[in-house]
Length: 255
Ligand code: 0L1
Ligand code: MG
Image (cartoon, protein in one colour):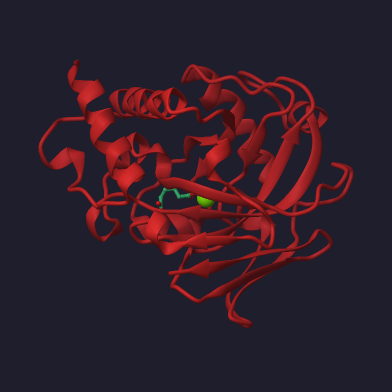
């Protein structure tokens, strides 16, 4: 097994068994290209277990997120069908190490998108827009990592919940968002916090995913990135998020 494949096994096993691990960068020198290779190899292990690629997530797309984790670059990860949580459904804390939730905007693509594209070209490839929540869960101890570490760990992808789909003609550039835990607001923000406009994140996805060997095709889901800092999940919590003009999306948390 190559070194990258053995690192992929380490992060995949940590995710599969919900056990925390030390940062890979504590013991190996990893650059960003290596880290995306580890990510691809670890997600290939999910495919070998029967999981299907359904989309991509963009990460660290807001100032709040960049400050929260202490890095300054946009990153991406892969989403599989097994990560999807039904709207109004329940998740179990046992599946995660130290999960957090964050509000996102989701795109459902109706056409492929790759390379350098304008915002108008990106929007023309969008079939629908939905309110969404992402459950992120770093497999690293204390949720602490370097940029290559988090990329190798599939950019902390763990789960996602989609609300109802809306036509892309809706203006989703600056929508108010209130994230509630047990009925109390815990984060308040705007979709404009996603790189100034969620479409900018889709433009970045087209460039970065294609450069990294991924494929945004018709039917692909893209999570544009967190609009606020992420909020920790605890057993018994009811999560609900209200998106101006797009409706609400939520889920419950079991032990
Ligand atoms: O989705 C995100 O913006 C998070 C990317 C990875 C950083 C983290 O786990 O907080
Ligand atoms: Mg996110």
